[in-house]
Image 1 (cartoon, rainbow, N blue to C red):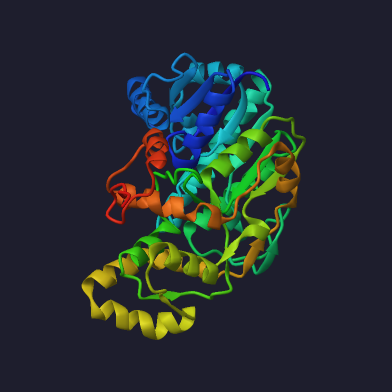
Image 2 (image 1 turned 120 degrees about the vertical axis):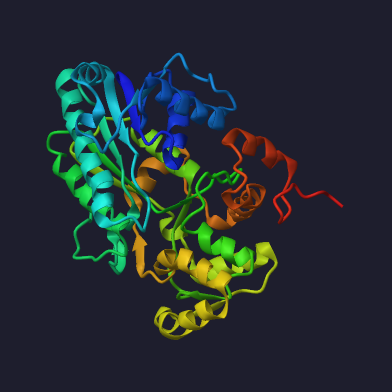
Length: 393
């Protein structure tokens, strides 16, 4: 590995964990792009990130460079001198920045996820010409599979699938751009599935996707779930994703290589996840209703029964399709590369309690806990349902 690392999305969930790996496990300079008005603001935001990660705003400041850049602006908003300087120093790019919103309009999702990736590829070409580039690592998503049914392999992309939301479609289109550049750049693509908190601490700054129905269930506002009990639910902890990206970016690549960072054969199912949730929380399972029946009959009745219930169901509606999927993800290439290095995806049963414990501590995002704090709190034992550490009796 030569030169500095350029990381986008360093203040986001997955990007923060990847940033921690490069700082803790290498002595390389890291350029971390931050959307900010100038260097001072970018530096301040990045120091907030290092405080969250390590409990120290000044951690690694000797080789962590805040780069005020915006993937929505031509040239990333960098002047020509700065672009040239970065290109001459950077040997690896990890592009993690993206909009993960399911409700953003398609044109806005495309501007961030597709055009933003195009601008990062332009910078990658400049790096390759100036100082050489070992890797362009793109964080995609397993959900580029869209509505495909059956097995979705690591080499597959365009199978005539549809998409459930603008996020899936824009990430699919962005991945096509990256693949098209593979003949001229050392491209590798990572496709994580549903990413949740760290397995040991449960830490996460983002309570969406899986967390939304879990929160409603814990609070008793999810009496029924539109789902199929047999549908697979593929979940991975964020530390597995970050470890995998870091490990797989250590060796040279030729052309493009895609890795599914998924549970694969270890994926759970809707039915097993419901049973696990009920056992951990100590509540009755919600009623599972076929999606069409729920949409046509049950949903209209529920939203009229209570304003609180209506608001909760409206917020969760975009996530419901992920509990009636008919796709599974093959991950043989990732397993073959990662397992010899001791990196294996754990079954969700082994860390699910930690996820809920942290969610209770953080009051489902209303009382955020830093990653550094979560590591200390995890040693104190489980939290009570109200968010405070449980006391032994």
